[in-house]
Length: 311
Image (cartoon, rainbow, N blue to C red; front, side, top):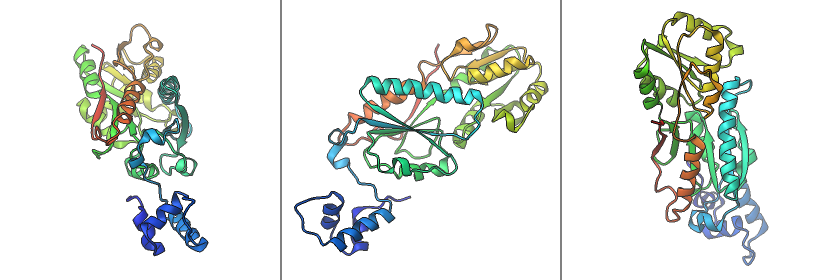
């Protein structure tokens, strides 16, 4: 979706761009007829116009507020809730320690309502697990120059920075260490591109991959999958989901990819693969780097920032 500009408003209101600027910036020393002013404001509202503050730099416009937008469905299984909890807790702690306030918003992944934050002036935005088709609908609500960082998402657009675990390397490590053939149990994502990246990089056939959604929606399916793959080594993405696999008593050997950063939760017999830090630390450091590049805050954009596996 193309963002509306002052030129668009000026054309529809049949006035100059300067007049539009005076009205939208509430300049007091200009005499502009009230009907003209109201017309400009109405058109700007209809176009969902968001001011472009890049030229004035983020430093000048700082509000000290950073948004965390989580796309999540109701009735999340506990392993998914824990994944969000550890991410938000870590990210909020780092933001608070650096003097920022955090605005946490839960979005309907299929129909994200942006009214609550549209008029907020945020210094940066983190978007978690966004559906590809909804990404531009969300990003259009933020001004140019505000760092927008995706977590648990892959978007085919080099203008946006993305933070994910290095799942291919973690899976390779888990498979190579197993004494028998492996299968994969993974948590679900709204971002289909991320899911495809993980499943494709695993090298497993569809029959050897189980994507765990809300257990209330499909009772017994995890147990069925494990029964069908009895005797195989089970690689589980998310240590809390690994705990659910442990509770079935079906898997003879398990490797947990610790995406929540809490390896202590699994049994002693479960092998763990940990990452060098959590997604929050990488995303926060990226935000700070972007905010210090005032000439063009998107100069680092287009990069995929991977959280590497601990040796």
